[in-house]
Length: 248
Ligand code: G3P
Ligand code: MG
Image 1 (tube, rainbow, N blue to C red):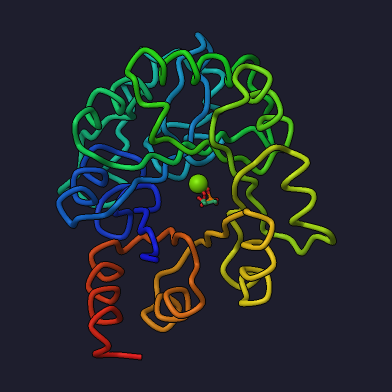
Image 2: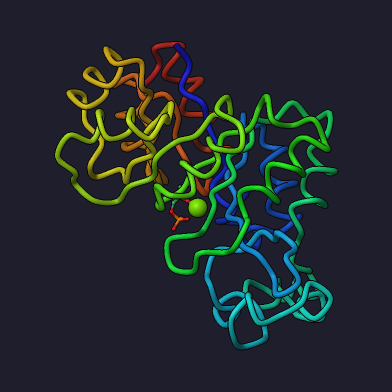
């Protein structure tokens, strides 16, 4: 089994996270998939953005939920990263789905609903996935279990994964009860025993954020289902060497 490599927020080590340049780099590097974070604007448009406020990764201030999409388009989401990326814009989910069409990428849409519970975000995201016929190769994940349950209420066949950065007793059964197919877990909590036990219950384990070669190798060795990395090209190179038995 080949470990799937997701570019975390795109190739976010070398281009501004969750923007088109980071997604393009990820695609060019041969990543199997892209992970991105989804939130809603004031006018209910799903956009790709990690923090609840725009301060860290744009030249603006305030909460995403207080901006309309049009207002957000005036912000620079690239200059904070480097001059080279000045004038990069925040991307909507719809723009992203158009860009991914026919690219054979697996999509992981992380619904950022653990701090702000964006009303109807699950339905809005679902409708777009149906519109662009991308449901079949998309995984919906969230730290907020309610988002996964809401998604299953809409359509029980949607592939979902429970995201966690904390140790949790009975994690596998909890995940099953949510109707999720996978656990996306912080790398320091990923171990062989969890992977084996989860496999027996038909649950996969993926892990974030894996940026060091030694961590990548550990993931390939343990038979981890997928990794999320800011450095997809390194992960792909390392996976090739692992497959050819060149490095252990
Ligand atoms: O989906 C994996 C990972 O992205 C979760 O954490 O904070 O990087 O969105 P974060
Ligand atoms: Mg994320």
